[in-house]
Length: 428
Image (cartoon, rainbow, N blue to C red; front, side, top):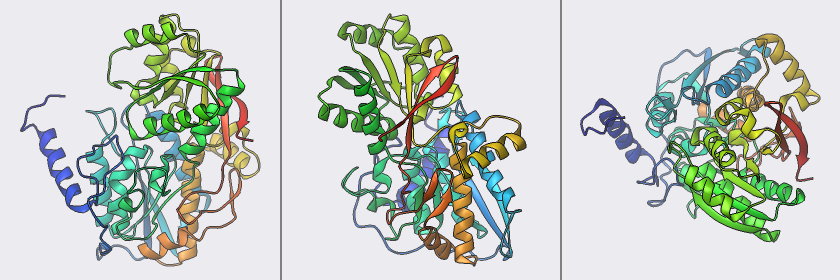
């Protein structure tokens, strides 16, 4: 990407981020990869719903990174949302449900882009038919759209955000999650467990496997650094010896010198807090090329086929471990098993890890619309919080007062024969 001051890309970012600065309380200059910083007390003034629209139509949109290496994972999430809507015949009560999948990534970044995500949030707020916004995939992206949607009382449900500070007080930054709730009300929900759980069970799993010396890496982004921090805390409590944490440049061409340095410390495990898009595959490749024989562990941001492809199956075979907030689709039972079979029948393919949570987001959105019984943003957002003892893919669950799901099942997986293979349920 060229850095000319007056390029179209620069102008687009400047305009959108300028609007963002005026609307979002607390984002300031923190950038897309760190928690936002509060600039004062959130405003309680709500953005009015625009007039117009079709009184008989309710639109659901998703904002997920369809451009870049996450595409194959994302499209199975989109398919999961579509499947949930198809199962009710595209209707809830007297309302016809329409769905539009939006991309929050840019070709320039090859992954989510703060300017695109911000623009998507404003676009959703401006459309009087949009009552639900499914997203984001990346926790860093969520902090840009959450305040905008919250100000408009627009329900947001994420299939994949795991940074605790988006919903839980006392875990992230001091101003979190208040800075994302300028209206003072909860309008954001998520259907996956959060990083303080994942980081903890990852450290416990590593300890169970006999790993005593760990080299800790992260990608410096909100999600990656966050889960690495949670891993570090738990590992220290378990008496594990740590090198790091060390932040990497996710855009580097290779990590050969880092791999050489890691080899000299002779670790039992290298843990990387990051995603496929922040170069987890290249790290795995360079570690093996340098002769590092330690186990390699990554969080759910790498639980996609693109990670194995980027690393090269031979570099992750048998000694690469992945944690995930849930169970792989083929291990689900009950309602989950029904979803898995219906997905394969409809799309003639295997769903990737987060497809099930796209489906669960779709079902939660439809249930909120049903409970509200009217086309009203505030009523639908409030109704989502009333979902209790829902017959979900992993059993009965509810949303708590913070917007978090009560389901806490996590799994450990390993790469074998070029594919992910379920290893065990974690944290039990």
